[in-house]
Amino acid sequence: MSTPSPTPSPAGFNPLFPVFLKLEQFRVLLVGGGNVGLEKLTAILRSSPATAVTVVATWISPALRTLAAPYPRIRLHERPFQETDLEHHDFVFAATDDPELHRRIKAAATARGLLTNVADTPAECDFYLSSVVQKGDLKIAISTNGKSPTVAKRLRAMLEETLPEELDTVLQQMTVIRGQIRGDFAAKVKSLNAVTAELTGGPAYESPATRRWRRVATGSLLALGAVVAVAWKKR
Image (tube, rainbow, N blue to C red; front, side, top):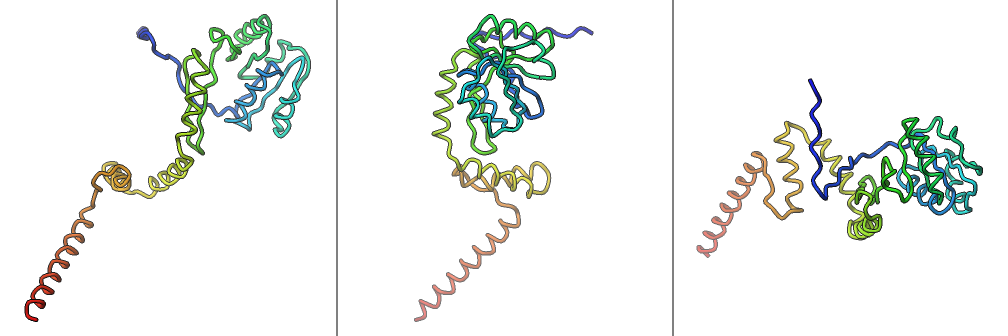
């Protein structure tokens, strides 16, 4: 049985497959120690600070050295790139200002089946770095399919300013609530509706027991009101 051909993507469609990697379980090679290398390393450490990163460059900036210093799994090698540097790595970042070196790195990495990110050359990239918004455990990745990193950064800045820090608290509380809810899926949905009704301004779900006690309480209040009214007339 033949495998069906994928449907062609429509114009303007972003075909990138979004994933969140446990990067600390992989090994990363970063070639470049200047501003571009610093930018890539900063992005890696911001999201996955426990990642093992090997940096190879003919010159490593003081800023990159300072950034790397607190992280024991980062190794710095101030020397020219060698193809043997690719061994025992899973991802490669080519982050220099030398296009010819980038082509060499890309060709050698592809021959070894390694995924490569080539700075400022989207066509040569196997993957892109997204702009990331993080509020505790909540993480939002933004992609423009390599078309405009500037737009992605502006969207990130807007979301960072707009989304409240309390979102992480909500996330943690919803996790606890989910663990405490018992019963089948329909019952869980009704219970969650009751919990979130106040946030949406809609009517809250009442269980049968809650409705029964509400009728009893309402009836008692009405009876009490009638007694008070009769007593007032007899005064």
